[in-house]
Image (cartoon, rainbow, N blue to C red; front, side, top):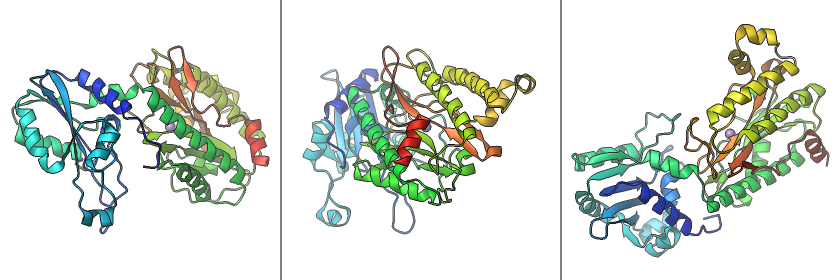
Length: 428
Ligand SMILES: [Mn+2]
């Protein structure tokens, strides 16, 4: 692994929290993600399932975690199943975890090889009543491809058609939303690497470079800092590409006078950062760009303060849209009259077409919904924007905010955002 070893106390705590949420006489099985085929004999780089990583820290493919209720001790027990490595396999695929290594990473005492999985599964399931299985229930997710989880559900239902099946996803969502201090430290590290990358970019950007050259600078900083890489495909859009929300082709030339919008974040030890800054290609904002930038920044400063215990993303979105509406009038993009005629929602939507916040954690868009009540330990983005296609530019600014008992902490506090700071750093 590229990151400093995570103390397995974190994974033990996470498993205990999950076991407390399971009904007695239950079994829970958590699978790894599939290794996804690319072309020919090549697969995509393996990406571990976030839930099994959260519970075990194991990044190796095909790993399975079994939690089961033990009738005699009246307690939940845990077994981790891993690949049994062979020398011939290691020559091509590199080292696979030994039992001791898997034990050390996860803190799970009982490590078995996968060839024993089915017999142990049958034994534990038959002496229990409920089976908890995982599935990706992220509200925006859909795919025609049957995941490992979906296939495993079918496999289990064939083997045990008369057991009572339960959803693991709502429990995992709840647990993953509120981060342990160790997790916050890992997110802070992702943020720190992201901040270094931005400083590198500020020194690098000048007219006539290609957007992908900026991407390369960021990638260099991420990888050389021990990050796994980008937490998501970076958006590096100049000029009118500022206004394409998920622009990832990053292949145009950055021209003088244009703005460069960069939405990027490192992934360190599985945890994501998610940052956006918009900077002038030639190092100086025009007056109009400054005017709109200050509008977005004013909204952001107020929006950050809204992120605190008890509220929801839906409530924050409503309030932020009101602030954007006011700013749109200030910068001459609309009038109170037009808002009255067309309705606030339509006018705001024209210039700010996405929400203000999403949860962040093991995924850049992490578990939780827009109605999830915020609690201490949750981490959210705060990313207002104003996109003016007619003027060939848009501005988005994004920080990552940790909800605390009394309010919030901006984890990207050290990521330059004030116009003077950005212009100064670009001139150095
Ligand atoms: Mn974001």
